[in-house]
Length: 378
Image (cartoon, rainbow, N blue to C red):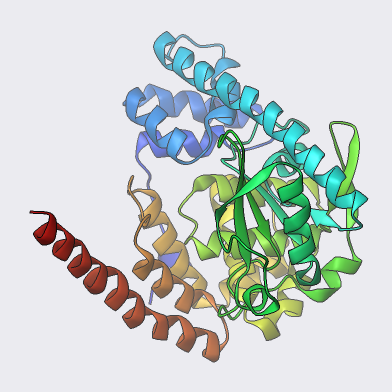
């Protein structure tokens, strides 16, 4: 088993520059490291491509544009600026849409938390345009799922994925999200009443989180917002659910820990141990520390390093980050990753048991159905 002492990773120049440009705060040492990495020589087209794939273009452009160097090609800066400007324009539109939905839900007596997207960007950076997001995510209490969906449908959204008629209680019980979009199809909205499917060992937001909700100023309007420890839980659960294949999610955790220096990670790890999420919190915090330079208390680091499986997971994440195509469109390695990431034995068995079923459905049944269709059409 890989231990922390044996972990020595060297990233290629493009990935290393992504990592350095995503670190905050900006200081002289960080700037010098960026310049030294640039001097190593880069494939700038690849840098832009993987930066876009990791959702980091706004941060990359901001950092590189501020450098007093001619080593960054003008064409690269122009490409990054065009993409960042397009993302900023879209973020303004999406923020307006989000605030309109929250207003309608509030008028209906429904508390909805915009736990990612523009709200997370505003919380971390004070700027909705500095974090890329493809859709809008809302989280409501399970008891409000049916009414919240009806409010959004009246607000001008249409069903993209999910039951199109009335949502019976059994459907809400078995599912966790319904996907909607605006009439133009340009903005997608995910209405969650759980964080993950019910068959997951960790599907619900911890009940105390609903009593700890605070407020976040988004474009001058107060919106419901998760307490820091609950936001960290959500971000680490989400990152682990996708094997941390996007560097953006590690940046989110790092910047949350910097924005909330009083956040007691050790206490959170103790509190979530019964649910099996302790290792996921430990992994997210260590990735932020190791890749982004986030400071962690010695007792937190000692607790993390006492679990050798975290080192195994970190190795998996780093190896995956060096692969451009990563785990996308293949849930088998992610299920294997999750089996290692949960602390509880029933959770491990759950994810391991899902692997044969997933393989049978997606790698055999679907391929045979597709082959049959080709045979029939031919």
